[in-house]
Length: 370
Image 1 (cartoon, rainbow, N blue to C red):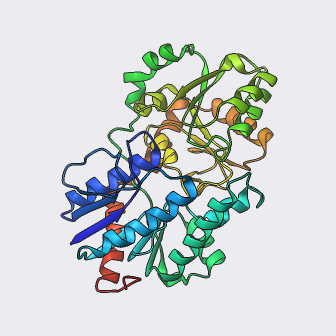
Image 2: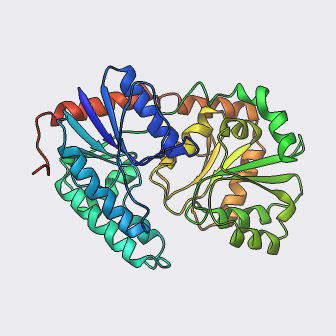
């Protein structure tokens, strides 16, 4: 099957990028003729034919429109068995809603996002069209499927849930013995400290403010927080200073070696305000690290309270602090075993099988290709 996937460039530093790369490689391994339509700037992948999508430097709102228009023209230049888009484009058989619903995201901010009004209007207009005309919609969690159905009136027969896969070899409990001591020494974290790990791009949406408030509620200098990701640190550094936490935080920026930092952590905390799933959940669990997440995250679907983590309200710092302390008091070996076991069904092979069922159902279908 000749499969075209439309996706943004990726450099393997983020969970979304690692998930996309893993899916593409698994599709190749399962015999698909995989073509990737993507703007320039991505790394090459064995077995994947790259079709560069030239886009000039543009403001974000114009770039969203340019990507949709350029992709439409590029798709028309060849013949494909299935076109699958991971972006809000105009010409696909399958749309993978990896970012969830922009409408639901805005609602999570109280429907009053700061600035970028034109950008939000354009994204919402594209989103409405995508959900209206694309034959098959793929959500990455049940929560996302329910949002799409309720907010856009998409019939359940057009929506499927296909969970992301995770690299179960790269993210493994054995990394604790291999990397924990060296990673902690690099970050200046004592061996006896209880280390929390926050990984995410977009600190506000991922709930870093709530996490800092929770950390301030937990006494003792041996509770430390490692922050990995991209975003404006300044408001959170100011918050940490006000809360007396500046010497308990380690800011690492973007890191390609995230498996080392899962090994260094005792708990991953991700109290997101909005999160379709977040591959960090699966990577942490596969690494044997319990996860405290929010009820607003699709990743909560794999968390069992007190067994492999906890689920809290994304705005309740007291509940988050209590959940972290409860996990601190539990045997690490038991938590690690339960966490790893809960991640093991989420393979890239299982993800490919989910998409294969969808491909079979829409072969020969025509969408907005005229």
